[in-house]
Length: 219
Ligand code: C5P
Image (cartoon, rainbow, N blue to C red; front, side, top):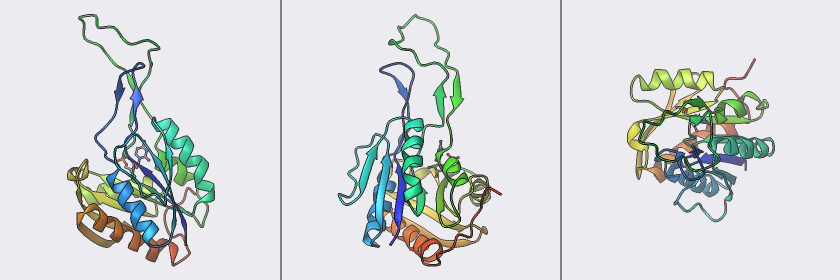
């Protein structure tokens, strides 16, 4: 049995007290991964952005809003976990300035200056111990496998799930599960629960049962 941390859903980055940037992530993949992990008798902690989806009752859910909140919550939980599955779609940009008051319309174009937020998976994977593992997701519209492998290396992940843009806000997914050496462990297409079961089977077999971490490390 392992303790598995899952990041799930979108995050929000506010421009002012009422407006925010976000994306269409539903949290369904995170919920399906949680159910698959619980069915395999693992403990599950989910750090989730705002979603309508219901997570399995047996999972502990930590609700967050922004990418910074998600990173703080995930980093606080990770030392007590065996691994992280980064299924969230955190907002990659935040406005450089957040207005304290609602921005009034002026009849003129509004220019926003956006700066990058921290990458949660990469930040956590940088500090993982030899016994901990990190699984990331890569959503690409071209050169899917190559870009997923580059991303796995850059983010120090031990396994990468490469999916395509049809996965967003959808009931199904079509993925290729890649090992740290770039080889394909499995492909899975269909309902997100079926895809999540295939991902957990790969994690159990390669990262938990083996009891060793063969992925990328920072140094
Ligand atoms: O670089 P890209 O956003 O495509 O990478 C996707 C992977 O990185 C997913 O596992 C996602 O959860 C994670 N990610 C993250 N923090 C971000 C952006 C992406 O953990 N700020």
